[in-house]
Each structure stands twice: as structure tokens, then as C-alpha cells.
Image 1 (cartoon, rainbow, N blue to C red):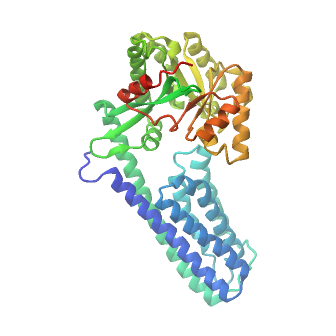
Image 2: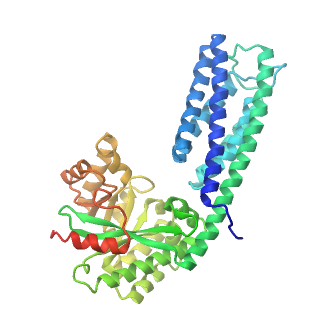
Image 3: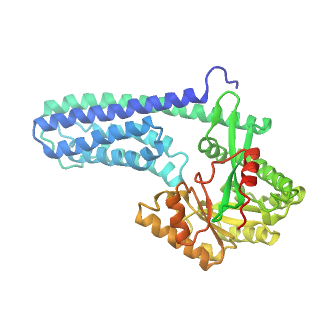
Length: 441
């Protein structure tokens, strides 16, 4: 397949446009029903349709800002619940008028698959199944408590309108799916080519101590496509993880990182630096994972203690015994191990205490809210305290303000990573950063 004049941005723009249309339709239709219930003084109907109107508007607002994550996590489930309530209380079938609002669940089930396709299976598969089951129950029964005061004539007109809009939604979702799958297919092909053409570059985000001395860096992958420009990691990394491309990408990153460590080892000013490399779940579960890591270390002739592998909590959803064995083998070889995103997923204290970890990493979502959210502050303090209790290093990522840094220091976290110090840098700029921050610790 060749890509001619169309780019990823064109598909993204089309996808965003279709989502905008869908959210506008939700807001407008709900506003019309809000107005109708207002005139017949059905205040419960006004409240429910009013909520749907606001949800449609907010979903449109977040779509404009390309924040589909909030739509998936918050507004889509709320819209689903509100439509179900409308079906149960205001669209109860009678001898004269059949139920119609439940047809909205058909496009919603398809759309659920689109927005949750990069999430866990319980969302990716569970949400479409749940919505389909609700549709089946409502389509096959007369369940409901009729609180609507609309006349039969009004309901007949509404049924025609609702069915028409449901068909339009179904068509829109089909277009959305087509655009989304097309964009993913293009990305997959181009990512494969990028690995062959070395278009993927390593960037380094400095990790510093409380004195400002650079301890090392986290390796981050950047993709600068000659035609598409900068492709964000949150687009190509999830795509790579769905295919075997993640194994090739991970190998490329590990080999490049170890080669860089070998280069740094030759210079006094950089010989102390460590590198942290993210390990994907699929990569970790590869039977040859440990063997591949050790071979790369041996080939590059580096000090294994300078390499730190970052695993995420999602790995604990798999065979814990296998995880322990692999981590122990890596630890025996001298590789340092870090647990990233601690407190956001599957892990618990038992896992942490029983694994040979060298570092806990405070997730940026906690650091971001540490000054404004009591729960985030409390969790951060617990993570720091746990690290001290286990005598392992603690580092906070996503540090952006002096106030966040001060909070962390006061509670015992003395290592940092974030835009307060530096954005991720290409190697030449990172080396210059290191030389400029030679403060002794």
C-alpha cells in the first residue's frame, strides 16, 4: 500500500469532525426534548433531558480539544446511563406506540468498541456486550415505569425522529470506525517502515537529585515521519503493543540505550549516568526476554548496574511466579529494576515487598494533584514511606513546579524528573545539559 496525498492528520481531522457532529446531535435533540418537557411542565423530564444536553455539549467541548480519554471515561458512560433511564421512564411501549430510544444503543455499542479498543478487555469487550444486552432487554420487553406526560401523537412523532437519528448515528459511527481503522492501518505500515529506516529517535529526559546533579535519564522514543511530521508516542506506542512491532521497537530502544551507556562510560563527566528503559508487557512476557536483555548487555560491554528497566503495574495481571523468576534473573545479572506508575493499577504492597525492586516511581498523575488533592497527597506520602521502609530509591516523575518539588522534598523524595528541570532532549542537548549541571551531591 502506498500513501499518496492523504496524511494521518487528515484522518484524525475527519475522525474529530464526525465526533463533533455526533455530540452536536446529542445536545440538540436533548435540548429539543428539554424544551418540550418544559412546556408541558414535566420537571423530571426537563431534568433528565437537560442533563443529556449538558453532557452532549461537554462531550463536544472535549472533542474539540482532542481529549477523547475524558469522553471515554466520564461522558460516554453517563450518556449511556441517561439514555437507559429515558427508555425506562419516558419511553415505555404501549399498544399505540412502541419503544424507540433503545435504538440509540446500537451505534453506542459500536462506538464503545472504538473508544475502548486500547483499554483492558473488560472495557473493550465488556462495554459493547453490556450495551447490547441492555438493548436486547429493552427491545424484547415492555419493562418500564411511564412518567412521560407526552400524548400518543407526540410520542409517534418522536419515534419517527428518534429512529431516524439512530440510523444517522449508526452511519456516523460506521464512518468513525472506518476512519479510525484506516488511520491505524496506515500507522502500522509506516511504523514498520520507520523501524527499517531508523526514523525512530531516542530522547532523554534528565533525572536529577535534590542538589540538581544529573543522575541519568529515562529513554523516550520519538517518531519524526518525513511526511506526517511528529507522531505522538500515545498514538504509535499503543499500536505497536497490539502487534509484534513492539518487540522490534523495544529491541531497537534497548540496543541504542546500551550503546549510549557504552559511549558515556568512556568519558569522566558522563560515566556515572544511568539509563531507564520502559519495558512493555508483551516484551516482558516473551519467553526469551531475559536472554535477550543479557545478550544485549554483553554485546555492548556495559556495566549492567547502569541499565534500569521500568516495568508498569499492568504486568501484575499476569503470572506472578513467572514475573518473580524473570526479575530475579535480571537482578542477579546486575540490572536495576524500577516499578513505574505505582498506585495506579494492579500492584499492592505484597507484590512490592516480594519483588527485587531498586526503585519506586511516583506516577505523574499523583504529582500533578499533590497540592490540590488530599488523596493524591496521601498516596504520594505512602509511596515515599514504603520506599524508605524497603530501602529502595524513590523518584517522582512529572514534576513541573517548585511547589511540587518542595512538597516531595519535605516528605522524603529527593529524586525528580519533569519539565521543572527539562523536557526530553535529543542526545546532543542532553549531553550539554549534563555538563551544565555538574553540581556535586
